[in-house]
Amino acid sequence: MEDTRWLSDEEQRTWRSFLTASRLLWDRVERQLQQGAGLPHAYYEILARLSEAPDRTLRMSQLASTSLSSRSRLSHAVARLEEAGYVQRRPCPSDRRGQLASLTEAGMERLREAAPGHVEEVRELLFDRLTPEQQAALREISDVLTAHLSPQPLWPAAVDSAADE
Amino acid sequence: MEDTRWLSDEEQRTWRSFLTASRLLWDRVERQLQQGAGLPHAYYEILARLSEAPDRTLRMSQLASTSLSSRSRLSHAVARLEEAGYVQRRPCPSDRRGQLASLTEAGMERLREAAPGHVEEVRELLFDRLTPEQQAALREISDVLTAHLSPQPLWPAAVDSAADE
DNA sequence: TGAAACGGGTTGAGAGCTCAACTATTCCGG
DNA sequence: CCGGAATAGTTGAGCTCTCAACCCGTTTCA
Image 1 (cartoon, rainbow over the protein chains, first blue to last red):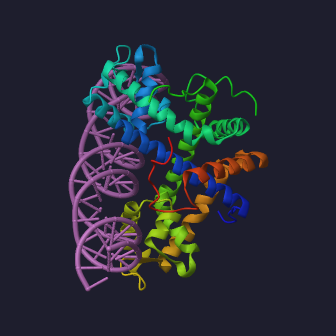
Image 2 (tube, rainbow over the protein chains, first blue to last red):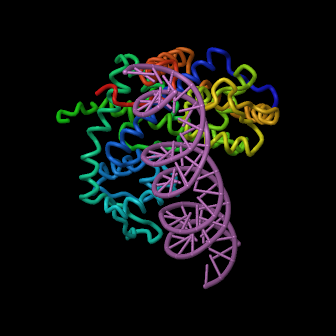
Image 3 (cartoon, each protein chain N blue to C red):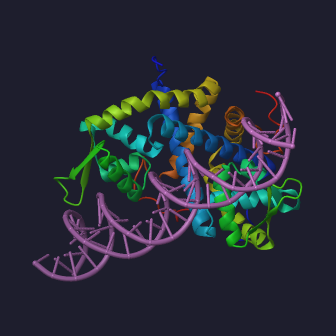
């Protein structure tokens, strides 16, 4: 319990810098979506994941994991999105405990409207600032970190590319 | 508004990976602090910045910018921290609009208790996973991003996002 | 078959955050 | 000096998120 492995000065600076960058970046992305599309990023992500799913439909638990959400959070969020008419829930036929969530046409439309502004923001704040080498490095670093952080592979596509390290 | 510069597949994967890693990392850090010390990271950061300041005292606006917080958020947070006895506020003598926030001895103690667990978590989740080269790369990337995200070293009211585009 | 354990999902309370509105002070031009 | 703009900080409403408790269906195993 004793003998904390404190951070060196260099590590501190790295941590602070990372913290600052990711927090500021996050805030900007969040604000852009909120003001430009009236959606929190968490909601945007739910719509986006559904839009990519076969039949635009997913089990709640699947949706939770692909959208990096707790079950509880997802439940609240989907309730809101359903009120707004963007998502529809129905019981899962094969497992009566389950629920299927589907993106409605209105939800798809909302997503289409929101996407350009969001993508533009991400491009400006992230990709326009980094060299190709830095982008590759960031990708590798993120993959390494994710591998240890996530209990399972979260998003099905692109898992195959995380071979080496 | 037309001609959105969509992300390439490669860019998408990078963005998703970064998003995933930083979100998961963030959640873990937040949860560790909340459960291990009963403090949200935002509060921890406020205490930490105060502890480093001369006299353990800062103007509210200074504290807001160094702790990456909006004025409003800081105001709420400091109100809570003051109730808890960790921070004390008093009017600023040189500017009667201002407030000075100081870390109390109890607050310092709380920070001392919270720090080891927090640092350990950061080390395990971040530094233990990355090679020295990756750490250096992450630092550089973060610096580049931060430089563009915050107009100056760190200023509070400079949140107007209408700059580019 | 029945009881416990597990898994899927929801709910409500409590807490923090954002946004906009507001007070009070200071700065600045005329 | 006066009046308007800018600055410092607070407040409250509304919303999202977390946590723990809960319900119901499914699986396990004796």
